[in-house]
Length: 136
Image 1 (cartoon, one colour):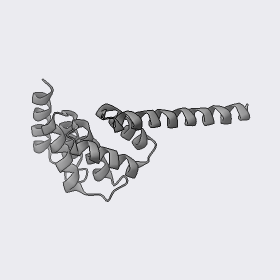
Image 2: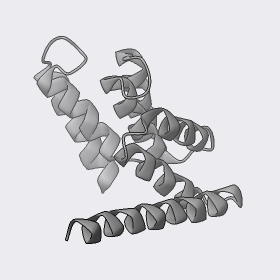
Image 3: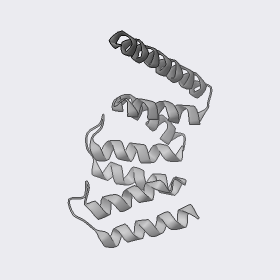
Image 4: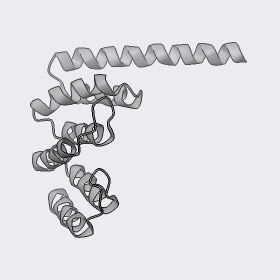
């Protein structure tokens, strides 16, 4: 039973690596969606620094969802130093670029005081209104 479990884990690891290689090949040919999925895969494996490289490349290409992910990395210090100003800037950039969920991250930060050192519900409401306007 134990050998079977180890074999399955090894096979899934190979499959995952193959998938990432495929995604990287597609991204290298200009497919931004593949690059984003590759960055998400790295993020989910807690390879934050590596994922930040892809998210940064995608952000420079104007890929909206990458802004939010960079905001999360900088807000939490995943693979980068914590930088609340950068996190907020990336979330605002994401919302401006069309990723409405970025406004929800700003709302969450304002409600919880995450990275801001104080709760600001009145600002949270403004970001929620931006989210509603963006998503319609």
